[in-house]
Each structure stands twice: as C-alpha cells, then as structure tokens.
Length: 125
Image (cartoon, rainbow, N blue to C red; front, side):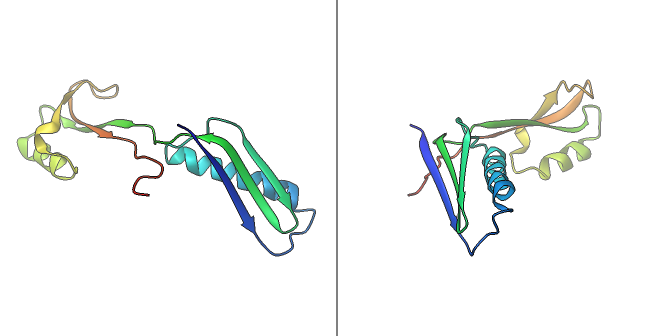
C-alpha cells in the first residue's frame, strides 16, 4: 500500500519574486532526500506556495524502503591472512561472510556482500 505525503511549511512573508524558484527548490530537495533514503517518489512532486506557506505533495511514496545490496572489495585473495582478517574486522558482519569475489576492477579479490533490507516507512508507529 502506498502513502501520500503532504509537507506544509509555514513561514514569515516571502517576497513574491522568490516564490517560484523557492517553491521548485523545496520540491526538488525533498524528492532528492527521499531518493537518498531509498523512498523515491512514484509520482511527480507537486509544489504550491503562498506568501506565507510552501507546500509539497507527493501522491504516492512507497511504504517500504527498497532493499540495498553492495559488494565491498577487499584485499587480493593471495594476500596474507592478517590482511583478510583486518578487512573482515572493519565490517559489521561476521568474518565467515568474507569470500572470494570476482570483481570488475580486480579479478581475484576478497569481498563482502552487504545486504540491507528496507525498513517500513512507519515502522514502530
């Protein structure tokens, strides 16, 4: 189920000449922040303004963040065991998850596949 988002900012009197660009900026910044948090809007961002209000409306945003998976390149597979252990110790995962990966930039390197499951938008409410 998707959710609607309406953000209304009340403020002091904004000069009329500032309103068009400020209104667009608020919408663009909000959409960029949502995308950065893996909650990209599924519909166009609508913006409205009056001299004392800035409003952003997004008809549909996802109810959950998208899942994220990343492979982190580590030392070469032929590196000393201490280097591999050091690489594993810096990551918040168990050492057994460090495995040999075929990377685009390094053919035979150790790597760690990190997976972050998306959270619910209103988790805990």
